Length: 233
Length: 224
Image (cartoon, rainbow over all chains, first blue to last red):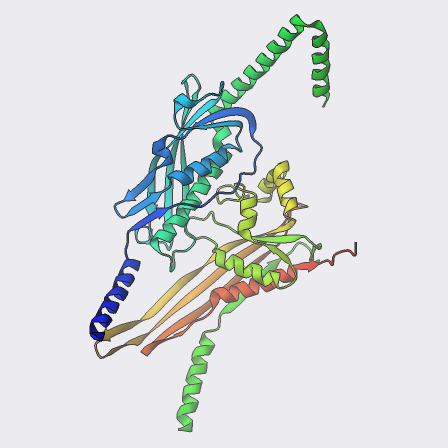
């Protein structure tokens, strides 16, 4: 009886050890990301998180699975608040209610993972390749921006494969946020759209003032006064 | 009997003496004056993580931070600072030189956050610990009658770290430190494996932390 129990115990121990040596990894990212420190431009955008993006599970190879869908939505929600003052998050293009907003549809092109046995370095690496389709509300394409992000673990020593890939994925997502904040307004097409949008806002404001002035001459002088005060400020 | 005990003692002391790391520190400061740190002001120690093949590990940064905290220097944890300034101190965006830092600090929101955290000095740490050379061999076996390890193995480790101190108020560099620590570790297999490890990284950390402590003088808080 004792012998059987001992055998069972030994079998369980061996199974536990072998499962620790297993080379497959299934990771779900549940962490939060820090609030971005940036002043957004007075522009509006509608971000379309399609269900395929919000529930995206990457399978970079047969033995690795990374559930990044929810985490990447959290990251991008946060990052875009540092870029646009007025934001709308929707799950399909049809739900957009904002006028004159830039429509941004993110998607994942590919996720790649590299382990110490692949790169001969003592690190795990993760690449997430995003694509941002930028359009006007009317559906006119502004640009399609390729946005790669990269993350690596500092040291893979004694780390489990799952833990290391999770850490590298979080760093890659943070890098995606950094890349977005740093480079988004440097995209020439976006820059042109911003300039056009600012011209449109100025023009419509001038038209509003003109319309007000035509209907009420007294309001015209007060608006002019307010404008001159604002200008002097 | 006495002779054999003496022989063993000599053998062990010889091996242990071989386990000491050799550490060299180079220091550069524009002036000989210590860096003033007013009461309430803090230092943040950050690791460089933009190199492809290595990354300044968090454990080392934590170790240096702990060494400095012991000397009444307020040290803000690295991750707290990086999260508060996100995304401007990520590997992709962190300033590599003073001109970029100056541009970053021109942003009112970043400057306000740095002031809110009371961070006065930023210490950049860059470096890694690598195994240079290894030799010997050790083999272990286990069987129904028992097991054991036999053989001898040795390896050399080298830790090279550089610290650069930036003043976030004056936006100037206050000094540089470089530490090189090298040592050999041994593993002897005589039934049980007996390690004689040289604490190369730990030596580099304590030397660097102690030297950095010497950089700063803390000013007592005013009675008000």
